[in-house]
Length: 231
Image 1 (spheres, one colour):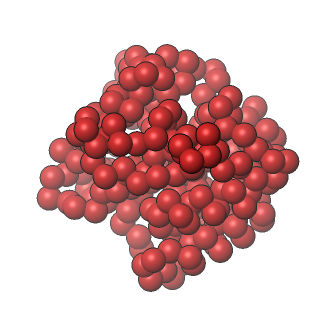
Image 2 (cartoon, helix red, strand yellow):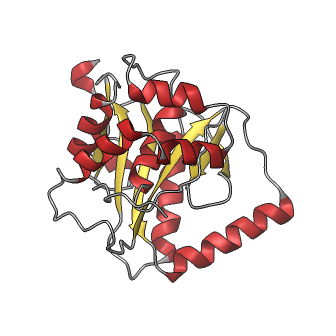
């Protein structure tokens, strides 16, 4: 498997990454300091995506298997407008989660004619596996990812070093809340949601991840929000 350097859960790094690829800075990534209602209320509004970084312990893999089996047995509805891609590159989960967050909100985000818009437009009709392969072979995005991975505040692991942390994205699309994890076989529909309730609904999914593995402390959350100073 091709491997990239892991991306840090750092809004400054993420914002430089996406603006360098052509996303206009009216919207940006910001830290989420807690999931209580009063802390969520501090986030700029509207917020269109949450990115959760969590430890990939045995609990994650057990739940992943159970979740996929349940969907296979009972089925689920998935909007045809949802953008979902598989992760075919090691340590690329940060970039996959960022693309999931942005590609499912192109109706509100604004772009220059850069590499990011070109990638999303050219892959939206492809299968999840084809999207993943296209990212694997996209030199412009991989170079931007590598540059961003080296700009974080923590020491950058080597490409071959095992990283037991993983990013997923939570988005609202066509009336439902979706969990987008490039390691899973398909997106997960978490039920009805709306633009008004998205933040609270997505926070509940994050809480479930934390409850599932209460001994772990390495959870961080970043929101993609319309920042007040650039409205």
